[in-house]
Length: 347
Image (cartoon, rainbow, N blue to C red; front, side, top):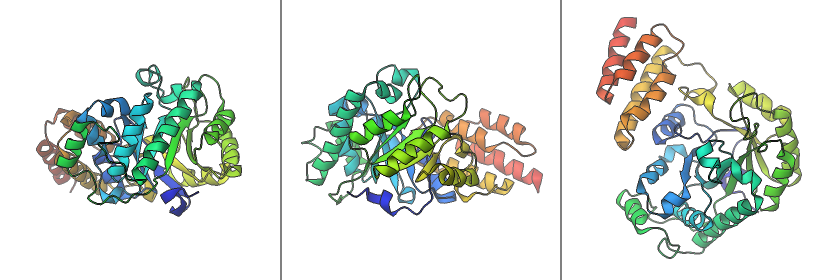
């Protein structure tokens, strides 16, 4: 059985991990044009919200062709809502769908989704089968209306030209991103369970739900999962605590993964996938491009951009002062002015 675009990726596969509040369309775009990851994931989007017509959530599904291959990530608990979201994502032209079974945030896991699905394999199975059905029904020609997608969602997508004019009726790959366990490590058993449910592409973060992001990612456990996946012809990506391209390649080789997804090391560092340290000029140019693209999208509050600006402004003389000015800015013009004034001072 084909794994879609995954089968054609050049190895080693080193992709951009989904990060809530971080991998928005502007961040993904800047990363794609700066150093081109093997694959890019969106932030997770709630299927229940989509099913009820929450069009604001659709902004997270804006993407540029430069981001391909791009995978849309979903979370939630309602089986029927996952089905509707799966059909929608196919119509939006994404290269794949990923189900989040790893988010450790209490407001997510506390409602039974994200990492809580590790404790609820029955529901996890139903969700996987529902998404698979949505993908198959799309390939067989079901319309958005017949699939039960909310009329407001359909109208929004048409208005913003998000739906492909002639979507290719094909099966896109389903993947799952999860953790090595809930309170205790159960990675090998959990991986076998997911494989038994038909998962052919698996990403595992090397911490349990209980750890959140504390301690170190357990790559020895991920290595054991990699062996299980290899035996079952499952594409496996490790995740957690990768700080450089060199380390990414070393971990892939040492632990037998097909690839890795990189998260926090890319914050303020769209150059990550080139494996190079940016010059100060590179940083200033990236800030301007990021802000320009962010404002072109014009849907997120300006405040949400500031964490990215703070990440960019580290490790050079005057960074602290510049960062403080950025925090007071109210618009892209303010940012441009601050950058220009700083540029004059360093010439």
